[in-house]
Length: 101
Image (cartoon, rainbow, N blue to C red; front, top):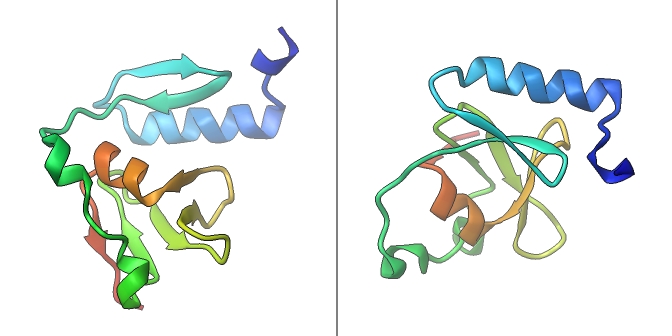
């Protein structure tokens, strides 16, 4: 039960994210508010190499969050530190574009 309780700051951040994505239904998953994003991607399309391997350090998702590759392998992080995902998870969940810094 305690793992489903969010701190006030995290709850406010989750609600802010949800309000920013008002066109997507929101659900609770493991105590974290996440938006459902429906994309058409076949299994072979999910096997795209990480852009970090070719020197791209940031991508933007379809919810306008900028994800940066971390120093901890294939993990990508948002600037606020609230979201972490592998490249495969990012590619499957979101439409991504390269960010030129």
